[in-house]
Length: 454
Image 1 (cartoon, helix red, strand yellow):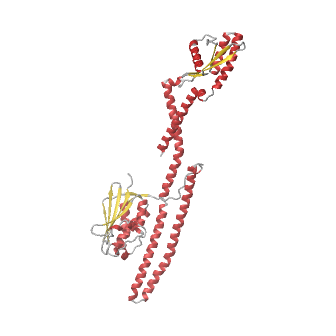
Image 2 (tube, one colour):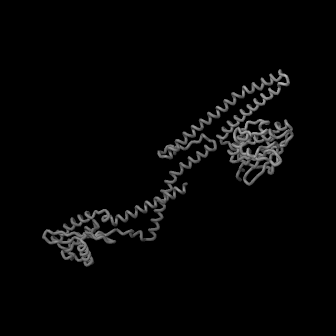
């Protein structure tokens, strides 16, 4: 945008200055004729002419010549006085040309003759002695280009100086417009990354134009959105904590009731316990979403080894897998892959995918974890050996609270938030996540993360 605005400013100023200079030069040459103010020239000619005739009659030709030269020096108007037959009172090198010009004006009936280099005006007057004379005023036109411009070196310096001045002015004006827009763009980008504490600079907000108004509205918007999100997260946390306490008491009560009921009624309690566990898991996932939102507002990134990071997650999940005799196997093509991450957020994403794989793998099944490098990306694939999902549902798995309409979810439970959390966390890290059915059965979830440069 800077280049576009700069070029338009530069082009516009060059056009305006060029047109203005051309009009100024043109009006300086043709102004009297174009504006119709020949009366000014005629009045000046008559005033000076009468005085010159008096000097001629009283003091002679030499005094007249001196007076005409003085008038020419002061006003730029060259006056000649002709008798009734068109002969000049003072000898003049171009007397013949002047006489022809007068006859042309007399023949055409015009008082003014406009030529390329001068304007000539003719006016008949009667002197005090009763004789008739013709006053001729010659007003030279200014040259189109001053003499110093015809010098190539001087012209080059003028052109370079002119263009440099225009470019400097265009640059200052462009920066005045684009700098605050760039700052607003950077602030908007920070907001999209979850930083609602960002504010535009005071320099922008103090401006009295539309950009300053935009900056003030932007700050009001981010402040309002930040307050809404904080209120929403606070509400989620409060509700979740309030629900967890009665759920915990309910689970304790179930255990107590179970001890006093006959065995044939245990199935009913199992059902209640399962639903309570599902509700507890949902509350836990909601709290995870709340924590994720809080993490996205912080800029606590670090560069860590993804291979070792995944190993630690696998080690922490082994107890859960080994309860049903399930085995987790890591296959890594590389020893080290460094990525920029928020450890707590990325751990939550990988743990959710791994927990899903453990849940949906059959007893004694194997969960495979692959770590690979593809160009400038790190690729982590987690495969279970469960039933998989219908092909049309693979893209829907990452929607919040989406559950597949099959025995996979109905039998194993789950609230449909884990993969949605993983997707959001991966996207926040500049990566993405996909799910596909694995050959031979089971679901394969693949996560991509950009590697650190260098």
